[in-house]
Structures are given as C-alpha cells and as structure tokens.
Length: 196
Ligand SMILES: NC(=O)c1ccc[n+]([C@@H]2O[C@H](COP(=O)([O-])OP(=O)(O)OC[C@H]3O[C@@H](n4cnc5c(N)ncnc54)[C@H](OP(=O)(O)O)[C@@H]3O)[C@@H](O)[C@H]2O)c1
Image 1 (spheres, helix red, strand yellow):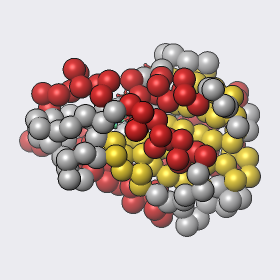
Image 2 (cartoon, rainbow, N blue to C red):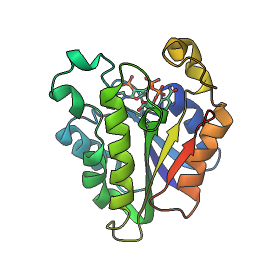
Image 3 (cartoon, rainbow, N blue to C red):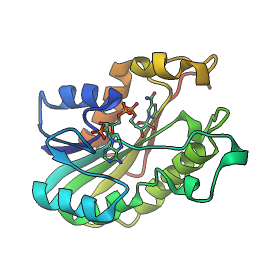
C-alpha cells in the first residue's frame, strides 16, 4: 500500500512510520518535516499536499495541536483548534477504492485531566465524527480513529499532567494503527487505555 502519514516524524508517528515502512510505501508529511510540508489547519495547504502526492491507499493523521489551558482563560477560537474534518473532507478524492483514513485522538475524550476542556471536547467530537462519517464515505473507503492513553515515549514530557495514568507501550500503539489500516473495521474508535 502507499500510505501517507501526516505527523510521521512525531513521537508516535516516527515509530508507526518505521513499522509500516517494512511492508508499505510511506510518504511522510509535517509542518516543517517529512517528504512534503502541510499545515493541517489550512485547507489550501491540505489540498496542495494531496495534489503533490497523488492518490494513496491510506491517509493516517498522527498530528495535531490542542490548547491546554484553564477553562476561565479559553477563547471561543481555542475550542476549534485540532478539528480534523477538513483532512477527511478534502482527502476523500485522493484515496483509492477501499482506502482508509486513520485519525488520532486520546484518553482525554473519556478521562480528561485539568486544563483540557478544548482537547477533551475536540477528541470526543472526532470520535462522533468518525462514527458518522463512516456511514457516508463512498468507494468502500473506511475511517477509524486510534485513541491512546499517554504513550510510553511521551511520559517524560507529560507525566505531571497525568497522575496515576499507566503509560501505553509503543508496540500496542503501533498495532492499533496497523489494525485500522490493514484490518477491515470501519467507524471504529480503537481505544488503548490502561486505567479504566
Ligand atoms: N503523546 C501522547 O501520549 C499522545 C497520546 C494520545 C494521543 N496523542 C495525539 O497524537 C498526536 C501526535 O502526538 P505526538 O505526541 O506524537 O506529537 P508530537 O511529538 O508533537 O508530533 C507531532 C507531529 O505532527 C506534526 N504536526 C504538528 N502540527 C501540525 C500541523 N498543523 N500540520 C501538519 N503537521 C503537524 C509534527 O511535524 P512538524 O514538527 O514538522 O510540524 C510532528 O511530526 C496528537 O494529535 C496528540 O494529541 C498523543
């Protein structure tokens, strides 16, 4: 398969990319890294990326920003950061028949921590979006989302925010992406949580 991995140089993305590259042709996209540059917050940039790569068999997004801040300090705009629907809306015409989308969210959708009203809302919204979009994508295209707890490789960076959370081993995270891409599931929220 030819697989586009947006965020393929990130903490999770680089491990997933190395694994998938053993069996598949990989194209990596990032804002400032990878084979092609894209800003997933910008529709024009997304369109240009897809045009430059051509058709693929799987589009995987392991990128995204979120605003972590106290509820009192949030603006309305802060709640829109991190929505990924345009990646799917625009990407549909660049997927081969029976292709797939795999998005990424996290445990905040179901088990939020302090300061995460926006990412928790966006993650939960993406879960609902995936379930609904799976009913409408034509051409036998599938869509799933991988929702992980704090991953092993990010513990140092984030553990202060996640007291008592068990880190998720990277091989489990990688397998969730493999399941979405190589399996036949559609509309699934592939959760890898270890606390609930
Ligand atoms: N880390 C965790 O424990 C964890 C757990 C569950 C879910 N998640 C979610 O998984 C995703 C990846 O997490 P991570 O920890 O691997 O992140 P990371 O290490 O910060 O890597 C982010 C990757 O995404 C790219 N990127 C960031 N913003 C982008 C944009 N606007 N357009 C295009 N590419 C962009 C970056 O490339 P450039 O640097 O070139 O822009 C980089 O390759 C995030 O959505 C995160 O919320 C993370």
